[in-house]
Length: 86
Image 1 (spheres, helix red, strand yellow):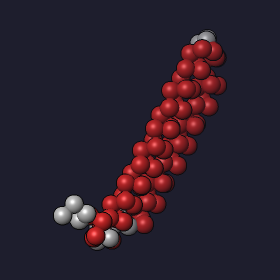
Image 2: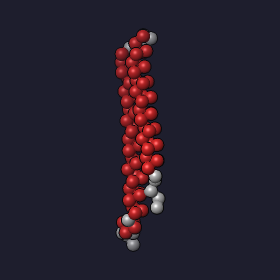
Image 3: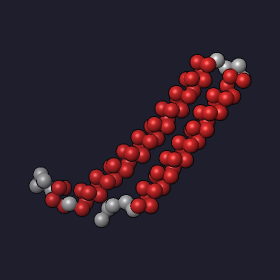
Image 4: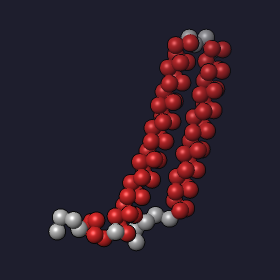
């Protein structure tokens, strides 16, 4: 069977949490440091939005990966589904 183990799902979720936490910390640091360096609020807002986009992209990739692997696993478990056109 070609199903991925539970350890793979756990590893993906742990990495998503770690990346999300790092991006959140960077977001806080940018919002704290940039005004003290004399950078305008519009630049800080732009950087925060960029980090939020990256965060959501990582989450979306993880979800698509897990759903894709689950579909492949389900197709492998039901051989009649894979042979519909024959």
